[in-house]
Amino acid sequence: MPAPALGFAFSPIQTLHQDRARQIHSLFQTDVPSDERPADAYCLAHHTLEGAESAARTGDTSTFHWYQAHPDANGPALSTPTAVGPRIVVSPDPSRMPRSSISDTSYYVLGPRTTAAPPDELDLASAAYATAAETGFGELLADHAVVACLLRRKHLGDTLVSWAITRLPGTVHCDHVGDPTVLARDLIHEAGHNWLNDALVATKCKISEDTKFHSPWRNTQRPAFGFIHACWAFPLTMIYTARILPETHGDVRRFLASYLDQQRRLLATTADDHRNALGLITHPALRQHLQNVHTEALSL
Image 1: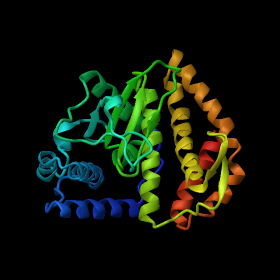
Image 2: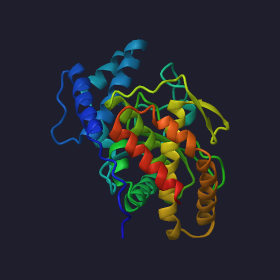
Image 3: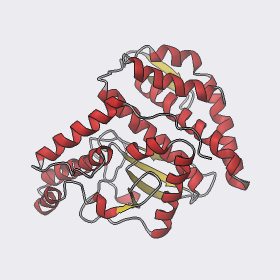
């Protein structure tokens, strides 16, 4: 039986998706397709905007015209069916992904040479999305993990690197170990960051950078923005892991059980600081969302 959903629907985010997608499409003198989900249109429009801006800066007129002709970044043609709707799953070469002033990390933009991931990685991602949906995170991944960039194949126990950037909302970058339950954890983590970024923009909530809090995940003092993000995204993965753990076996079960134990210890140290940090969130409903998830994870 599917686990209860955590409730990621947040009307300010839905309004942001609709308005921002419409604004970007207007730059290309096109309308948002009536049959395209607002979250999908929002994500893909940002790929088109980023790709077109990059092409314009470098004088690449053919690529710029391609984006003009494909305001959805050709996303629908690249999509694969999943339990949360059509997703775009790609496998870019990490060594060829660009870096620029928009991001401290590398990132991937859908473009004219983009192809879908190979069949085994499409199957892996599809199974990961299904696992996330069964554990109550389908709504989160439906709206905030529209594009999944699968990067390095690693071994269980290796350090897995994943990230998202604000310029490409709805896009996640993840290493993986070939196991859908582990990949689902990391998709949830990065989609959680995307959700919170959108929520902060949608509610016009600006977090003061003057106050810092100790982050047990980095063992350093971090500005409130980063601390609040960590106290949202890691608890989401804890809730997911606790829900999926009974369905796992062998090495994967041991890996995830160890992860959950580690996260329990880290999160326990944030209880007082998190309460203080939430005082910086000026939107009551958003503040309650963040509190609910943190409290549930503390109870695990």
